[in-house]
Amino acid sequence: MLFFSHEQYLTYIYSSVVLIFLVYLYSSGKKRKWLKDFGGLSMLQRFSKIPPTARNIIKGFMVSASFCGLCMVLLGPKWQTTEEYYEKEGMEIVFVLDVSLSMLAEDIKPNRLQRAKIEMENLIKDLENDYLGLVVFAGHAFSMLPYLTTDYDSIYLRILHMINENYARFIPYGTNVGNALLIAIESFSNVKREKVLIFLTDGEEHLAVRSQVAEAVKMLMERKDISIYLIGIGDPLKASPIPKKDKEGHTIGYEVDMEGDTITTKPNPALLQEIATLTGGTYIHDATGDELKNIFRGVIEKHRKIIGLKTRNIVKDISQHFLGGSLLFLVIFLLL
Image (cartoon, rainbow, N blue to C red; front, side, top):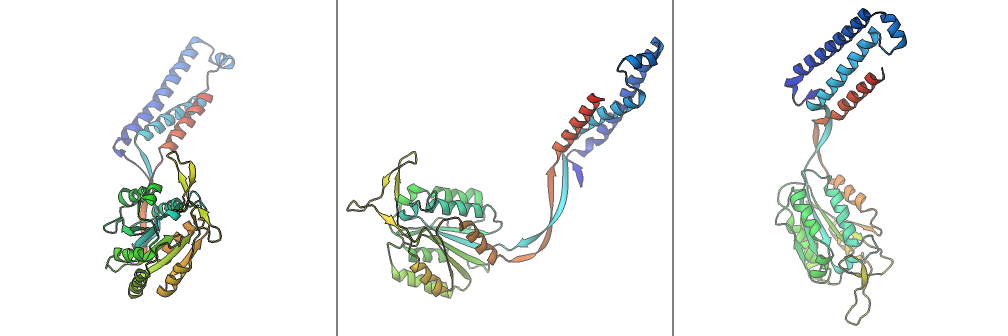
């Protein structure tokens, strides 16, 4: 359906268009009469470009239509359509992101941590009405939000962008999976909603606090309303060094241990597979980073509940079509 933002001026435009058309015909008629009085209209038409009456009418229509199109652009033409869509129930999604030093390995480009953030952001941009939480962990786990949020742009993505290479080098060294799980479980609300925990790590646990892992497993088994997905990232067949970067982002060396030997990292999914088995969760490993997007979307869509079918109005600005039509009429006018 076509409508205009300033429909109150349509009458004036239509009147102006008719007036321009009549004035053009009147001026053409006056010109023809003057030439006829001058003498030999048919002779002048034969040796000049004076248009006949029918062409004058067409030219008058074209110039009037061109003027009308330009005026319509000023009125803000809009086209409204109605489409049906499935209304989906909001859910709670808590991401647990490993930010340990090993996540800076570049067996996945640009590195494990950045690739995880990129795919998380791509997913979040398509979410709507979902409550998001974010837990990061290395030697210790931290909840980056005091409560779940639906403000993706101003809060969630802004915090996610803060987690960079410098952040990974600042927090305590290690990969404390148990502590991260405990903090993540506490992030969920008691409201009756679908709840999904997405735990993303390279699985290389340098700080094994098995008592915390056992406690987390026990809590997950009690919280039947939380679906847990443990996602491993990194090449489990090849050990990768951890590069050091300068301020410009160029590699200037690799991380070394106390003896001066280069530190290498290779994912070890054994613990994550064990947790998934004990809690009834799902373990998925992505060695290249290429499947993260599909993994995230598959997890969300699996637990998404459809409430019902609704309709919504879609309004598009079509000023460019009227402008294009106006220019086309003007070109035809000049060619006639």
